[in-house]
Amino acid sequence: MDLGLRGRTALVGGASAGLGRATAECLAAEGCKLALWSRGGEALEAAAEEIRRLHSVVVVTIAGDATDPATAAKVAWQAERSLGPVDIAVLNAGGPIASEATRTDPDEWRRSFQLLAITPIELATALLPGMRKRGWGRIVSIMSSGIRQPIPELAYSNACRSALAAWLKTIATEVIADGVTVNGVVPGRIDTARVEALDKARAEKIGGTPAEVRAQIERSIPAGRYGRPDELAAYVAWLCSDLARYQTGTFVPIDGGMLRFLP
Ligand SMILES: NC(=O)c1ccc[n+]([C@@H]2O[C@H](COP(=O)([O-])OP(=O)(O)OC[C@H]3O[C@@H](n4cnc5c(N)ncnc54)[C@H](OP(=O)(O)O)[C@@H]3O)[C@@H](O)[C@H]2O)c1
Image (tube, rainbow, N blue to C red):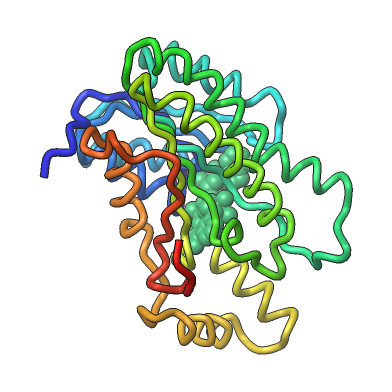
């Protein structure tokens, strides 16, 4: 199936690893030019180099920390300066720390809100006017199942991402008439370094090994296993495609059946 993405320009966050990197690979395979960003360093450059080699597309990198209030404007500006107008923005970066929900910290709230809400909101806000003017755009945010069913040890994530989801849902109705769709994807448990670290933290908290924690969680997933990053990335690429032009304001789980309620 031709997703109609050849020649489009995509800005992908958290692109040095995990879900962001898998998404970048999928969009490159569809012929997109890419601006990849994360805090930067060797992993980001290596991801860019590998994608250029495999897919022969233009890939630029931008270093920026999503917890820094100056980052969104800088990333948007650098992406457009390097590649021209951005058609697709995949909003994604790292996750916040785990904590006990009844023992949170005001500074950590501010840091998490910047990371998970303000930076993606500012990034989308900077790119939306151009998308609307050109009559075509895609905003896709990588969220968390915590926006549908709060995860006990991830209070910062549950709350801050819910704010982002509410904002995305609000703008989705405003920009669809200009050819811009706004959607979120809700990962259940996808096998990345982040999930490995969370399993380790849970093992330390309750006793046992990370492998035991993983086996226990896998038993609760109808598919019987964690997902693979490419299984989520394929759906993100679909949301970015021209074919998905009538889909907006949705937050679809990619979770092997983990969430049991109806949408
Ligand atoms: N995997 C899952 O099943 C799952 C489930 C629910 C939610 N999520 C969320 O989905 C997002 C991606 O997760 P993942 O599993 O792909 O994690 P990951 O494998 O740890 O990758 C995180 C990516 O974000 C970048 N990053 C981390 N902190 C950053 C910051 N402060 N500013 C900019 N970039 C930053 C990292 O690169 P650098 O180190 O180069 O900055 C890396 O590219 C996270 O927000 C995570 O919480 C994932």
